[in-house]
Length: 127
Image 1 (cartoon, rainbow, N blue to C red):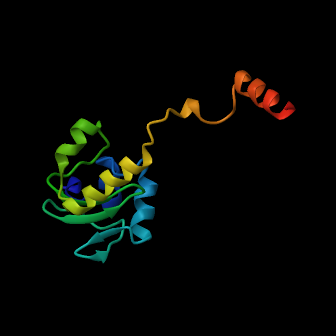
Image 2: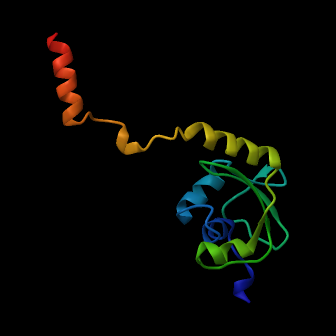
C-alpha cells in the first residue's frame, strides 16, 4: 500500500506544528528537527513510536508519534496523533517568558497620544 509511507514534513504540517508544509520542510533542512539527536531530512518516513525534537519559533517540542496523519485536520483532532513529551524545564522557561512578556497593559493604551494628551502637552510646552 502506498499510504504506508508518510513524509516527515507532511506529518509536522498535518499535526499543526507548522503553518505550512514548506515551513516544516525548511525547518528540517535548517537542522531544527532532530531524530535520535541527529538532524533529519524532510523526506524521512515517519513511523509510529518515533520521537522527534522540533524547534519552532516559540517552543522546543519533544513529540512521540502515536498515529500517522496524512492530511491536515482541526487542532482538536490533530493532537490525538502525537504525545507531547517536552521536558518540564522547557515548559517552565516558556511560562517564564510569557509572564515577562505580559505587562498587563492593553495595546490600545500605548502608541499615539490622544487629543487630550496633545492639548496637555501643548499647554505644558507653552509654560
